[in-house]
Length: 130
Image (cartoon, rainbow, N blue to C red; front, top):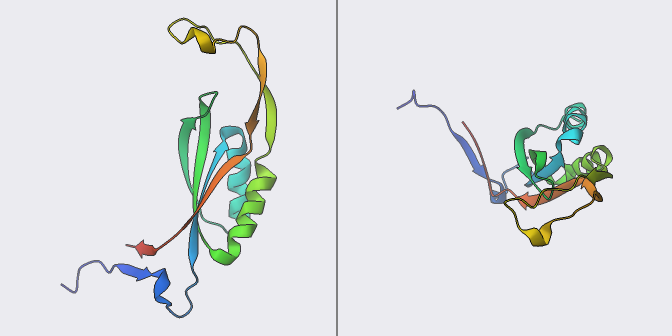
């Protein structure tokens, strides 16, 4: 039994000495902004998990960052996201109504706002490291 892998687990609300409460920051950013944000997070010594994702009106590529961070560092992470993920205008070419809903067909190019970030901040109840 002693040879089993040691599992480190604690509940952050237990008030363990030296442990601060943490948040999970989930930031969905446009692919064009992801490398710049990734480098900024590394420079600030913030660890993140980077996932490829898709969605939104343009069905374009996004990157989702999952960042576990102490409460007192959340504002700094939000500043990094804001500074590196600016919204901008992009011209969207008309899409064919073939096979789609004719009511949503736009016959001419339109400008849409892209970029920026969608951010969710969640409390972390438990941290487990194997």
